[in-house]
Image 1 (cartoon, rainbow, N blue to C red):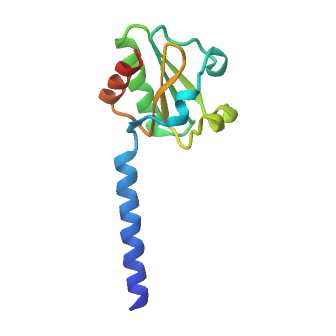
Image 2 (spheres, helix red, strand yellow):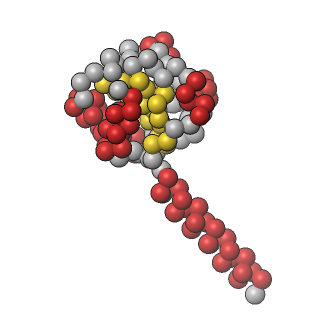
Image 3 (cartoon, rainbow, N blue to C red):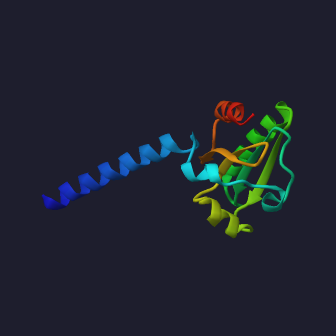
Length: 137
């Protein structure tokens, strides 16, 4: 009987964690320490956009990274002055650690000065990214 109770508790906890992960994945958030960080062309390996920059941290075998790349590239083409920069997380581990990137894809929305406005861990929705750009511009 005790084994059954333990099994039910573990399954309930795992289910709750899975639902929480699914719900929070890809949601754009503002972290307090991000406001202190400014990224430039030297850190990114590419020039910042005139109005905003979408920075995507990806890895080679990440399927959501491919879909995120298409979404962000579409947005960068649609919105004047916005650029999209993709960074291979495996090649830039020092920057990944400095920024606290825990999974791929992670998207950072930067303003024109390179300050992080918001971030998303996981695949963000197109509408959410466009709304975040409104804060950055």
